[in-house]
Image 1 (cartoon, rainbow, N blue to C red):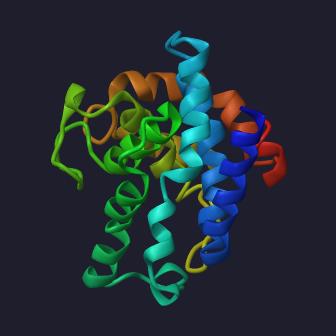
Image 2 (tube, rainbow, N blue to C red):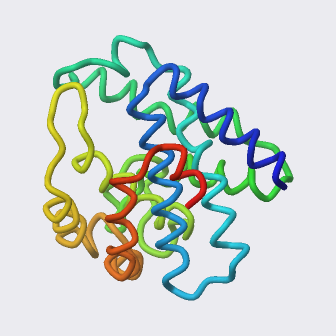
Length: 202
């Protein structure tokens, strides 16, 4: 398993060479997902599996153009659609494997942009029809963007980004996942002062 973990993080670095913000984003998301998954009392193996699967979920960004991935301003509708295609590309890369870790990475890739109320993009899933791994992944995936510096914007204050998540409980996010996110808030706050290498050990 140790070698498998090392391989996964090395593959995530390949994504980082295309989009540095995505590479650091992946490390934080994996750590936040692990914190969230631990809150509802899920078994230890489940908590660890999404943590390892998460670095692969944005693998589809390898297929995006550098101009769009690193654009410093607002994306056009066409550019936004190109970014959204990364879920399909990642799913195609990860499909057809019986390994539990790869299967969960495939599941997260397909479902992490679904919304609890059914208005997300992907397969148009809603509520409990969205896999739990995707419901958990959606929270940090949205939270980390305003909480982080990007080429075209400064980071929001941490508490403002938290409030943004709380306000979308029951619409964008599974309320139980938001409650777990809130319960793990103190641990999550610490991640934003950690170095990237430390996040992989979280």
